[in-house]
Image 1 (cartoon, rainbow, N blue to C red):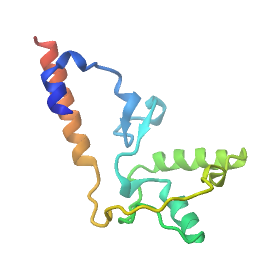
Image 2: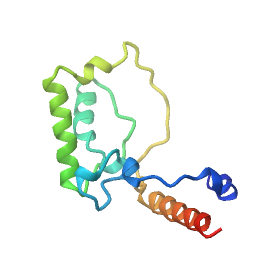
Image 3: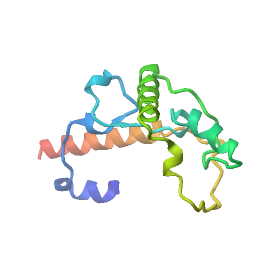
Length: 135
């Protein structure tokens, strides 16, 4: 993808990064329009999903080490939205399909979070946009 975009800079558009904010970055929550959790280890939903699945004899596809997200305000936001959903009768069990298909997948044990990819993506995007502005 980077090669294709690098050869066609006219396809790259500059947009407010708050529309795809990675893990809160260093921004106040009120400025973020879409929050993208990039690291599977740090997913706030895992503290709900893992026990729920275990109680039904299932495993989550992510079997790597679970690590608390480094921004407590991001976790608090997720928890607040999750709890408000439950309070308004939107329960996860309402969205579970009748038939669950088990599939083999590569283990995530030893997974190293996505932050290195995100840093590379941001750097390459910045370079492409810089080059577009100077040509």
